[in-house]
Image (cartoon, rainbow, N blue to C red; front, side, top):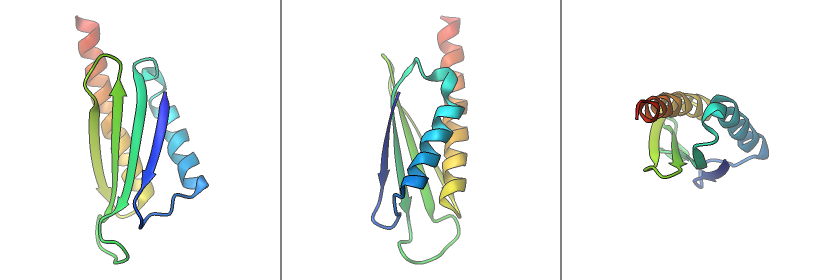
Length: 104
């Protein structure tokens, strides 16, 4: 499973942030690693330099073997919270897809 990390010009893509994202994804989605070929992470600050509620966005797109990609988005006050919420959504979506595959 390859993780592609992208940030907009308003988010500094520190090595620490990228390591946090990679570790979180690997931990949370480890049971699906055989089905996922790539995960794209897109982090952005919707308001740029201004402050505002829920202005940090995390979009996660999981590319699956022989399936359509799954994309989820989360908005939060902090990047870490947006990442965790998007990861929870992606894990739930992957669980649904996995259970459907097992039924067939």
